[in-house]
Each structure stands twice: as structure tokens, then as C-alpha cells.
Length: 295
Image 1: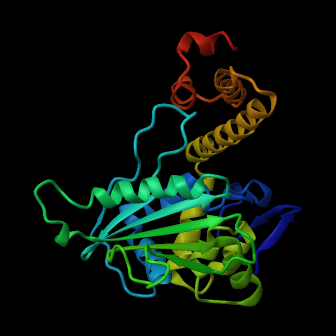
Image 2 (image 1 turned 180 degrees about the vertical axis):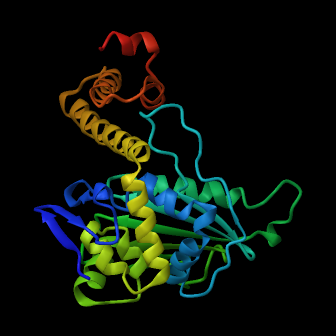
Image 3 (image 1 turned 120 degrees about the horizontal axis):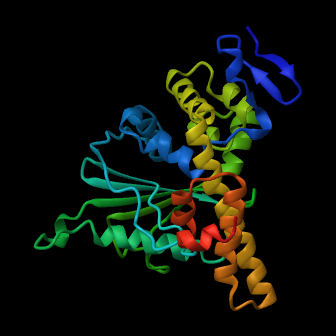
């Protein structure tokens, strides 16, 4: 049975309770950092992770272990130091990084993570000859449609094409182009990647008929319908948006105190959204007393 349209902008599947309706314009996509980690950084969703790796690397990858997923950071004013999903497989480490938006310094930032984890592949006393292969997978939105679907990078000599490092490979996937080709042209090759950029209706159409992708759809919907999860996801997303906007304004206006003003504005917005004090502290580094004065 087709999905029934209840109101404009609201869709409801007949097999779901009416109270679980989701407004399509409020739907949090799988490209959200928190949703992405909930999907692919959860041990219970190993099948989803392995399907993603199979699509991106074009071979079967058996995940042995999920490693550290986040590097601690001092405050929200730092660039997010996140390793979205770091995987140990047979003889290799695979880091998956979700890049939502392209900006100056993005690839420098990625390189810091890549080489930091590459160095960490060798434990004290171990031989460099026995290092794991290291694979970096960048899932990037905001790239031009003129960019290829997939780019592969290696450290090589530009003249002889000889590789400087044999065990390091970097892939970048153009999520917008992949989604467009999968959804509008029926391309099946990167279907799970396309789901990351899909809204509610697109996600249903993209996933139907594939058991693993239907599980992905169910997990995304579950996170959207869990009030506490949704509240946290939206709060973090909003804080990041405010951070980006205010930092840009601070640069344009030459405000030396931009960082402090940024924290205060983020806290005000989070207070308006009735966010708990401990979450506000986490994402602004303001004290309880400073936050209380903003009420």
C-alpha cells in the first residue's frame, strides 16, 4: 500500500501508529553527525557499516572492531575533532569521515586526522614494516557537480608516479552527485551513500526492496521519533550553525571579542530551546553563573 498523505508536508506509513507521523520538512537526515554515528558507529548495526564499506571499497570487508570514534576537544570554538567511524578490519584500519560542506582548510583539517591516525597505527616497539594499511574515506557534500563521483588520492611522485607510502589510500565521495544519480537516474552502485542525503520520502523510496537499507531507514526514523535523541541532535546542529554564522560575522566586523559573544549567543539560543544546563555548558564552556545571567 502506498504511503498516505495526511496533510501537506506530512506523510504516514499505514503500518506505523498515527502518533508517529513525521513532518517531512522537520526530518533529520542521515547526514547529520549524530544520526550518522548512531547508524554506523553502533555495534548492533555492523551489517550497515559493512554494506557501506563494501560499496565504497568495492570488496567485502569484515569489521573486526570499532575503534575510538571521537577525539576530546576543549570547547565548541575548536573545529570538531571527530573521527566519525574508525574501523579495524583484517590488516587495515579504515576511517570514515563525514564532511557536510566544503570550506577553506577542510582538507588540511582532514589531513591532520589522517596522519594522526596513521602514526597511531604503529605501537611503540613495533616495526614500521608491519603497519596496518590505512584507508581514509571522506563522504563529502557541497562539492561541485563537475567533481567526479569518486576521487582517489595517494602520495606519489608526480613524474614517475611512484608511491611514497604504499599503505595509505584516501577516497572522497561526492555525496550530492551520488544522491542525484541514484535517486533520479536509478544508479544502484552507491545506494547506501545516497541515503545519507535523502529526506523522509526519498529515503523510503531509496531503501525499499533492500533488507539492509530498510533497517537503515527504520533506524533513522527511530532516532527522529525519539524525543530525547531528536532534541540533542537538533541542539548540536543548531549550535554548530550559530557558531559558523557568528564566527563569520566576527571576522567581517573585526570583533576581537567574537569568540565570547559567540558562546553567549549559542547559550541564549539553547536556553530558548529549553536545553539542559549541562548540555549548554558542554557546547559553550560557559559557567553555570554566566548561563544563569542570560535567563
